[in-house]
Image (cartoon, rainbow, N blue to C red; front, side, top):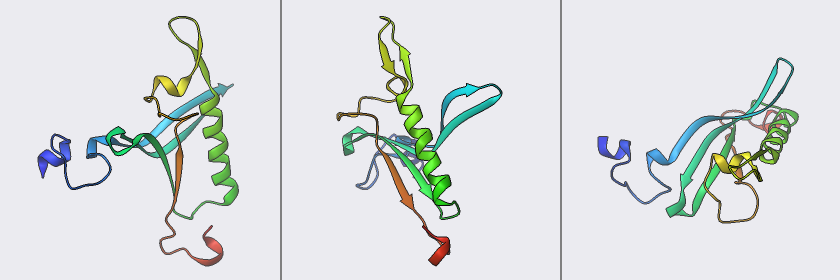
Length: 125
């Protein structure tokens, strides 16, 4: 089991190895004054062999309002629109310096997972 946890051998069929996952990944946004802004993905999956070169995952435990959740996706949008210059002076999206090409158009997908747990009814989205 220790080898499985280190990602040196593969486990049962699934998506990637344990090493394919990162949690609480912070993506910084430009600051205004002393206000630092970021969007933090709950998890990021890198599993190109499973058809997921990169997937950002946002888990909602149904403790936030719809407005708070929508604001997170606005910050993701701002992050994916950030540009930097490459070594040739050409503009390129910042995310491309952090993640491999997705094989598709646009930025990496963000999956929203709802985990209602014990919250149900009006409290849950």
